[in-house]
Amino acid sequence: MADNNEAAVNQEEQGPQLSLQRVFLKDISFESPRSPMVFQEEWQPEVAMELNTRSRQVGESVYEVVLDITLNVKNANEPAYLVQVQQGGLFVIAGLDDQQLHHALGAFCPATLFPYARENVDATIVKGSFPAVMLAPINFDALYLENLQKQQAETATTQ
Image (cartoon, rainbow, N blue to C red; front, side):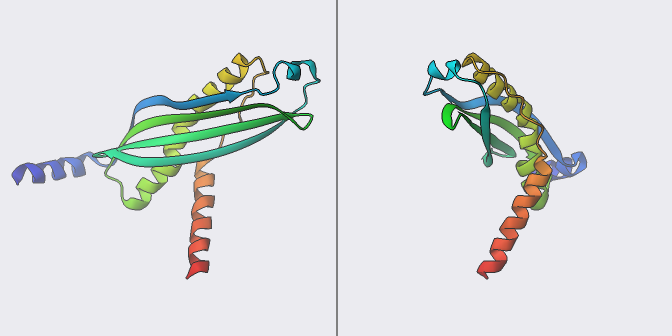
């Protein structure tokens, strides 16, 4: 019983904790269905990007966060390539209330993973013999708040 109280006191004294433990590539996919014909055409790409995140608790104070980026690129309204990267990370998070934890998992952690995912997307595209794509920085805080407002609006309309 005393050990549990000491652990609780130690955690309170330490304050909130959020640290990245590991970055890993969870899944990667590249398709270029029209190769090599696509290389014979004038290159005027139309890029559509989809971005998703998900998280789950995998241990005591340990969370897996996955940033999923999909680029669907067309040239002259025909598919050129599709690349999907799922960039994962393990984060130790302790001492946060529910709202802070949700925000950390929905904004801070994906923002930390984004540079790794961006590099994997770029490297994969270049290996497919296409010009590099430099994904612009993303404001994950703004996306998090936008998603939170949508969820609150949906909750209000269903009540």
